[in-house]
Image 1 (cartoon, rainbow, N blue to C red):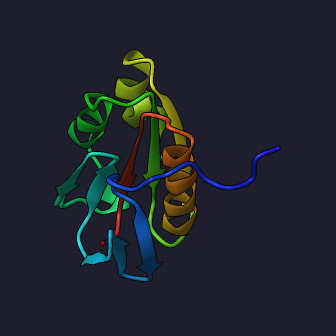
Image 2: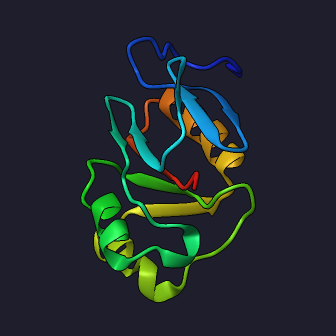
Image 3: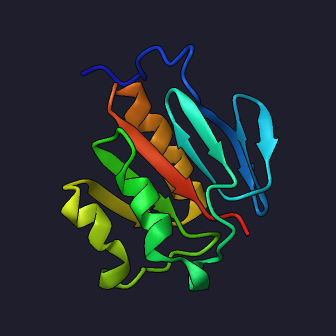
Length: 123
């Protein structure tokens, strides 16, 4: 059984995180952002968890990914089913977790070569 990650060089990797930031490839971000293996979408939304809209989720559903992770801040909170419908219609896998867990899971999935996107709510 192989326990180390595949080579992730050249891919966006979460290198650190804290209460109000996430570092991708060593660069700190303090805004809500989406991370994909090949690109970043800083300022994905200005929303907080409480003000997330269907339009915010539609953007995630339109990304070229098979799995979408949603980091809901420093604590795990679940969005309403109505809010998540765009992901269901797009037939995307969705996992909701806190930001630290979303960062770790994203890194594992890119190491496996998966097409994954992570939307991180930091504000």
